[in-house]
Every structure is written in C-alpha cells, then in structure tokens.
Image 1 (tube, rainbow, N blue to C red):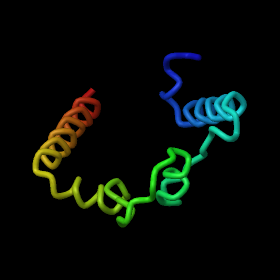
Image 2 (image 1 turned 135 degrees about the vertical axis):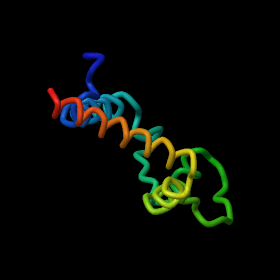
Image 3 (image 1 turned 180 degrees about the vertical axis):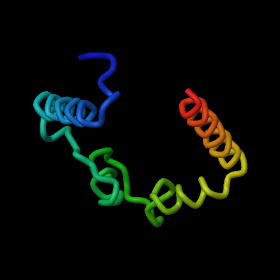
Length: 97
C-alpha cells in the first residue's frame, strides 16, 4: 500500500477497513476480540484470561479529559500560540505576494 495512505481522510478510512477485514479473515473467531473501549473491561479480561479488576474503568483519554488537559497545559498553550503566530505570518506573506 502507498506510504502516503494517511494524507487523506478517505484513504485512511479505506486502509483501516481493509486492514480490519484482513485481520478478521485471518484470526480464528475464538481468538479474536473486536473491542470497543466503551464496553469496559469484562470482554477484554475474559479473552486475556484475567480476573476483572474491581475498579472504575479508566477514561483518561476521553474527549473532555483530553480537552481539559490540553487547554491547561502551559507547554501546549505555548506551542498552540507559536503555531497560530506562524500561520498568521504565513498568511501575511501570501497576502503580500
């Protein structure tokens, strides 16, 4: 497959679907878990032959937590500011011709 598969959203989705189909066709169903993180730990622990821990399922990477962390991280704020400044400088250069 082309090394630039992820340069477009449509190509990335097509690549992901092809990959998933290939995995499903090759892995025996009794050894395959199609896992969705929102389902929690039960199925994951079952296929790994582990006991289900008595904890609340961690949601460290949910959208709200990520956004709050991202918005409150000083280093990331600086990076975002620099990106916006560089973009603004580039827009001025383009406008000036």
